[in-house]
Image (tube, one colour):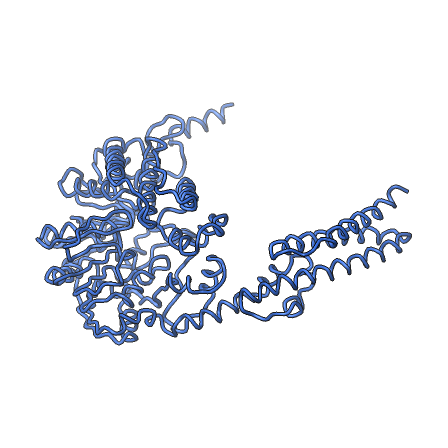
Length: 635
């Protein structure tokens, strides 16, 4: 008897709860959300109870009562949803009816609610599309109306690596009354800053992590993301413009080509970018000439297979594709008394410069580097040796592309030091040799990212909704592609709790501050800074080192960069002397570890602790493996 009455009592409890809630007067929009959620919960509970009662024929009367109660709850839920939809229509300037929203999705609506149904049917997408079609011009070039009124003249310097493209462009920049150099890397911006000042052309430096400026100086060397689009220059140099086809950063080059205001603009690029750049400039109706540059020293692929480290020579650069492998290869070389300079993307600029100087001064014999060496670093390298021919691109390990092989290999044979450059490889000789001979396919697209003004002009939606809407919006110009904004969207998910306390403008700035978002410690620091920003703190908390090992010091340097960049972006009080002192201290310590403790980063046998080859498959040496096998066999 108790088992039969239990479902009946549950229906009674659901009815009592419904009548109690139904007696309350509907409140504001947020209250309606709470009401709808409660009604959906009651419906789900009631559905489960009725399903159980279907197995007992004697409960038919209670089943009918349950169905009637379910109908009442549904009607009440529709009343609540109509109130919510009225607010929605007012906010988004629409006139949807509830019947339009839920038709064909009634079961989903009663299970998940009105707002989830709206998202499921992509009604917001249609609204955003309508707004974006009124805000965005048919062609992205027209997002820069002031630039379109200028008559710009371009010189496209096209050629392979080591062909003197940037040299010729910089010579013209030096002669200009005022000018701007746009670099792909902080280190290149610094190199040009120093070169111009050494040549008597006073120049400012501006990167996301550093600023050296004086108001009376008319030349600036900066990273391309820091370009000033409000100023009119005499001459601008845009370096490594083939990056326009990069899914993560290509937008910076597209934006510079479309929007930079200058009478004369020099573009330095590899041949793969020429077609898309010409198309873009034709659409802008700008004048341009093409100057083709030939490689100034021949590049030869060696016939003899390379044996590592036996065949290592002074002037070699060994290429691998991870920080871990750079350290292991350098340690293997150190075991053979071969000194190496180390270059990889995560190194502080000052450390990288010190490592380069050691190679330039002859303190080291060779370089061990990632593909960071392929972008503009001018080193006296005689031979490039690929120890690896696959790289991880963020999603998967894949073979090197033709353009990547040529970009890196082209660093061999610097003019004025060597009459020719050489290339060899430890593995997959056919891949590298054929890549050097192949014609590179032209870039199919230039990448675009949403303009801050466009996103903030949208009259509704969270910043995440606005960015997703932009990503879904179709560009009518066929050679443009959307840049990958997954990093910004991921950061907005982390920052969800700040949506109601920070403005969209503040959040937009914050998600575009560059830092390694896969580093948990740095993400936590970034979130802490959002919290301090929301509390209107005048300055940010200073980071502190969490260890003395290489990884901890590199992370600390990135934390200092984040402290600097976040403070600058939001114009907060910044302790400049402290930042510079800590950067110098961290850079020097990293350099010391790489210079004097490199053997510590080599692979060691897990049993006897003797050095293992850099590319050993297993973590145990042959001798210990045989000994272990013999012992196992004997026992």
